[in-house]
Image 1 (tube, one colour):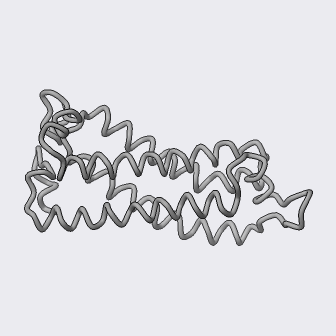
Image 2 (tube, one colour):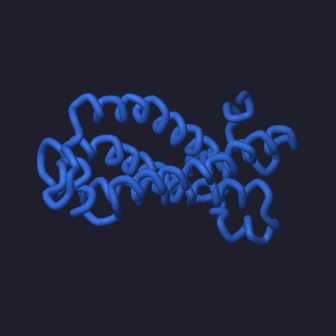
Length: 178
């Protein structure tokens, strides 16, 4: 972690053991992201109507609205784990040669998805079924942003130099803030 405190630190130039550790984390993120998508879509569905029915209770089948405590339990686990994972991903992304604009955009998109993923069930259940579209957007932003960060970071560490050059920002060397 001390490496991250150095201005301009790049993952590609990190020691082999550091890159192997970060790669292990990033590779384990892939099934983590897959389970996010599988659980979200598998339980609630992929349409706003199905999502609303899952949280508010279904009219055509025997399903009951989620209780306050059911939502609280899911929120508790997500609020402690998801922000930490996105923070770690963002830190790894900041040590890539991509532009500050791309790094900032991917970070904001992924955190916005995390916020919607946590707040969405509450809004659907207690405010209006129409908020299901925001929950769906949250899943897409969180999963898509996380996948993009994993891909960019792995490519930055291990990709061929000419591929890395394609994602590198001219004149930027990582954390210099330009």
